[in-house]
Image 1 (cartoon, rainbow, N blue to C red):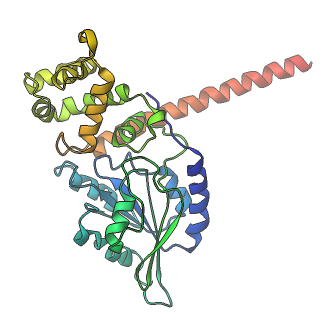
Image 2: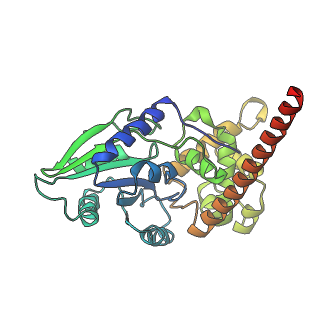
Length: 316
């Protein structure tokens, strides 16, 4: 399943970041702690020109607490990068962002050298909620739909600390299929860009392998965890439909409704605290995707050569 979503306003955001970054000291990239690598924008490194970056694993209260430390270690091992985890609705840890930025750019202090920070992230990752928490008032619109913020906003957090918020942005081509599935499951992708049943089944495919007891408890499945893990994804979705009353006239199952229920339960953490990837898993997915991309580029190059040969023959 290939999921892509890069609407027009994201092109404008990319241009705006390219202009703004010239005057920025530190970049805060807000990530979803349930899908840390999949929610990290690979376009950002190009746009931010190697600026120091604070990676913030947001929504840590929804993520598997046993997996978050491994992700923090993974990001902290990178040069010019610090990583912290927080829940954006909690005002105390949110203030750690300011200190984290000051550590990355210690010379930016005082009115003569104010700290200038750009905050970026994929849609619906919680940037607006975090900014409202940091500034102690509702300066940014919030919502559960991807793409709420549509233009850049400047917020003063301290006399010498300026924060620029940008609209949520993905990247033009998501090459890791698993990342596209996870971004859609989290609500970072517009609803018209994916099939909810397919995304729900991809989500269930992972959950049944790693969090079967949570599925068992949430949907009152009368199966042992190993039996749940062995179910085909469509059968598991059908069982959820029956348990949650997603049944139409004539006893037909409403799998669309069951998919919506499943995705809502994941997004709200009604299923429990889960993280949909480990550093090791993501490394495997990325390596496979890069191999496929290399093969795709090779096929295109061969096709271009064949086209050129045919064109030369036709011209002779």
